[in-house]
Image (cartoon, rainbow, N blue to C red; front, side, top):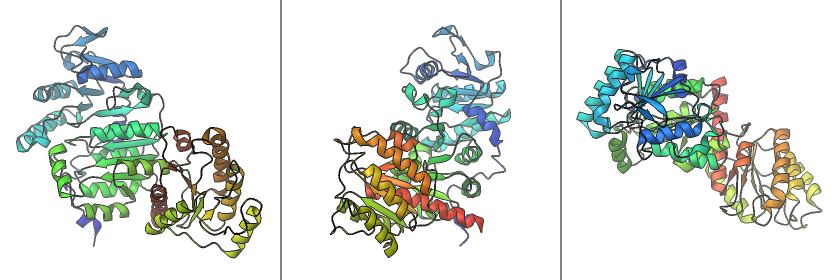
Amino acid sequence: MGYVVSFQLDLGMGGEERAVNSASLNLVFNPKTIALIGASEDIVKSGGMFLNSFIGCGLRSELFLVNPRGGEIRGLKAYPSVLDIPKEIDLAIITIPSSAIPKAVEDCSKKGVKFIVVHAAGFGEMGVEGKEIEEKMTQTARREGSRIIGPNCMGIYCPEAGLNTVVPYVERVTEESGDVALIAQSGWVCEFIILVGYEQGLRFSKVVSIGNQSDLTFVDFLQYLGSDPKTNIICAYIEGVKSGRDLIEVARKVSRSKPIIIWKAGRTEAATRAITSHTGSLAGDHAIHEIVSKQAGIITAQGAEELLDMAIAFRCPYLPNGNKVGIIVDAGGAGVAASDACETLGLKVINLPEEVKLELKDLLREVIPPFSGVSNPIDLVWLPMGQASSIHPQVVEIMSEVVDAFIIFTYDPFAGPTREIFAEDYRSEMLKTREKVKKPMVFVTPHPSKELDISLWTKNGLPVYPTPERAAKALAALTQRRSFLEKTKK
């Protein structure tokens, strides 16, 4: 079966109709000039909230405010219309009610605004009449070369530019940039991934909320991020795409240099109905999406938690060379759970060769009882507290002769009574060890803790998960990527 023919997700506009210069999309995230249409003193309104964000986050762009009453807002001049602004505008952000938006878009088009973010809902997701208004609005913008993001979207988040309309009430998330990008049809997904990801140590290069995709689409931004030097990991939440053929073509190219992780919504009938009312998208056949995604090098995630887990996994600079996993635990039950999780996902928990077992027995004879077997998983339940930072690196080095990746369950750096004492030394030693063996290691905490901060682990490319199952799923994603890259070489 040919996957291009079979892929039926919203096969609407093709590449020829929606062609956009990918490089020009950099002005969406790093505009020299911005017009905020609907600027307000009221921070409860979007126009006031966004203005507050621009000031608080140190927006790098030159900002122009538009309000029909003119005057001043927060000490800045307000222009009655975008047409009155004396400079060219790269990006216009429209925050006014949907009924007034077609006229504002027409003015932006006359002004020659390059990109327009339409924040409000009330268009294609409302049915046939709303879809017609949306299409006319897009045609109006296109007449003079303007391009639309949205409508029904939260807009743009780019920490480097101090540009944040996605979580405008949280300034701290613009303090650091990173290498993870996100494209999402849902504003809530953008918020959740940014805020929870930031807490877990992920830092973002660019995030775009695309809403109804009336003009610029998921594929347009995927192509742009594929060539963006600031982005190394691409995440996405999609409900439907405008052209499945374009998605596969672009994803196959981008996946050769960067991992693409997509949470595709719409696995159930109820979710499909919700998608129609949310962004007016056609959800498409989920089973077909799974098949063709794998062929295009896309890693699929089932939900927000899994999307974050996989993004954290790809912070590790190394991919496994195969599917053999070494498991090191401080509790026998964790070894059993990790083994089941790995084997269920197609990863192999191999029985170690005799020469490796002998080497491990020689290393461990002074720290574990004689009756404690040395196999895979390696059960170090008898290891004295505080010795993991010296013993675990040696065990990893020995096992690395025959395995491709590691799951490590340990108390010393993560348990409440011990982490303040041992975490820093342990993390430092395991980081050195990873660089020696050049193989991915993922870690599992012994029990959940609100006080546990994994951000430094994530930044160092040492992924940490609360369960063996989630750790195994993350390793499976890394293994899938390695397999895809090997196939593209043939």
